[in-house]
Image 1 (cartoon, one colour):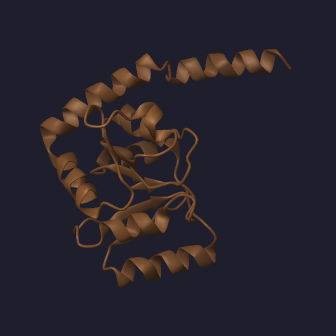
Image 2 (image 1 turned 120 degrees about the vertical axis):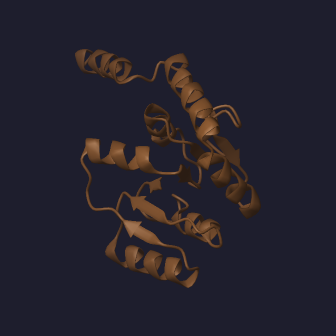
Image 3 (image 1 turned 180 degrees about the vertical axis):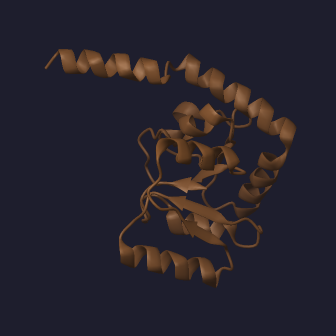
Length: 169
């Protein structure tokens, strides 16, 4: 599954292209312009990739979808930080992200997920297979939750930081 508005900057089409030949479908969460979603569906069909475009989801529905996914993936261009890996870590789902930008802040390749080269389809397919292994999932989940704690990214810590900002206004 992937999270973010459909578009070039979020690497949506590249993600669909990467999945071609893997036998894995994509759940797209985050919507997009109607014409982009039509083009994305056509792209998926041309590469024989199953695609489900999620409706608007509540937080519990989103957590459930992430939890049930083989992996959360992203090929976003220039993502400055991104909370998607943290969301994946929090529910114990493997995080497979392009080795660029802010994803390097949270994902440690091979320890709590994978950081992969954008154009290396074989490496992405291999990582998707790794993500299906129960022992790997458990190891990455534990390391991912440790990374959340190490970076102080808990919901409580975010609330405290927001309270300080609001108090200063």
